[in-house]
Image 1 (cartoon, rainbow, N blue to C red):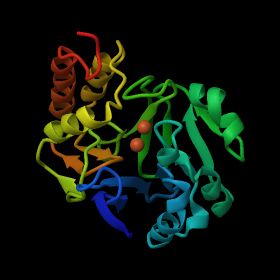
Image 2 (cartoon, rainbow, N blue to C red):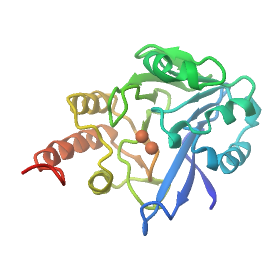
Image 3 (cartoon, rainbow, N blue to C red):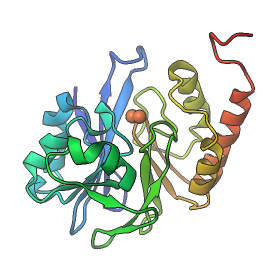
Length: 246
Ligand SMILES: [Fe+2]
Ligand SMILES: [Fe+2]
């Protein structure tokens, strides 16, 4: 197993580890994103078991002890399992997340107090300015939240567009078909009333890059891509789920 490094936008690096035993034969990638700036920012820590690989990859890009901010979309092992290992590695690193995530989980889970962010509050890294976007229940988990880098128009999209395989680091092809194929397998998305309006709100940012936690990142018109995803969920919702009473 190896962790590959690719620059997907200026000073935004994708660290990607493909595990072929998960969802074989295509396998599944776990991606973290490092924003290299005066105050380096990490989105996702990865699983605890992947931390040796991930920390080695970080060390190829920055001095890991200078990492300043650690965030992730929601509380799951692949998103933040290595959280406290990362805090131990970098003495000035602090978890930053929404007020809700801090209150519900992170005040207790993180070895140092997290920094709670309000909706639309901006984190200034030096060159990059990241806006915090609460996305409760989208695609899952009450405390979910994402970040939009206003400098490079990159949306750190977490589990949105999750798809299988070990494709290119960045693609300009639509990821909606692959995302809906993975959704049919995993059923990971909470299809509640927050889904469509949240995807619309993210689309209105018109991101130029979608940095995805599982699979290739997308480069191109991110707004239409997010609207296509919302439409695909809406038509999938019209079909009964496997096991539903008919
Ligand atoms: Fe998740
Ligand atoms: Fe995930």
